[in-house]
Length: 138
Image (tube, rainbow, N blue to C red; front, top):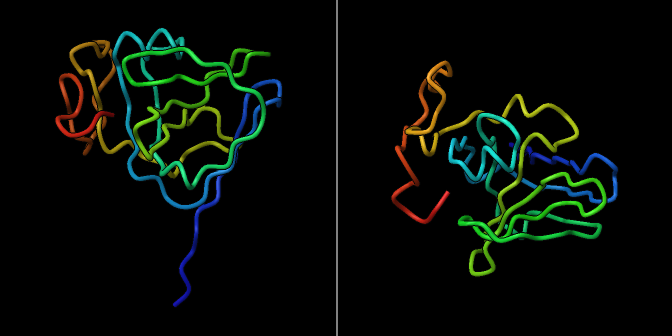
C-alpha cells in the first residue's frame, strides 16, 4: 500500500513570502488568548503545528516577540504567517494563510477558552483548555 503525503502551500497577501509544508500537522488548534486575537484581528487564531524540517520558507520576514515565541510576518504587507521558538523543532502556521481553504484540518483542541466569546460555541470533540496546554506550549 502506498502512503499519501499531504503537501500544502501558502503565503502572504502580497506574495513576497511563500511557504510549502510536507506531511501532516502534528496537531491543529484554536487559541482565544488576547495576543492571538489582536494578532489575527479576529475572535481567535486557527493554527497548525508542523516539524520545522517539514516547512520550506522563502522571502523576507519581520519578527516580533510574544509569549509563544517569535511571530513572523511579511514586512511589506503585514500578513502574519508563522510563529516559532528558537529552542523548539516545531513551527506554528497560521492556517488562514494557506492557498487552499484548510477544510481538512480540524481543530483537536482550543486554548484560552476563558476568553472565548460567549456567542462562539466550543468545537465539538476538541479538547478544551482554560489557558495553555499543560505539556509543551501550544
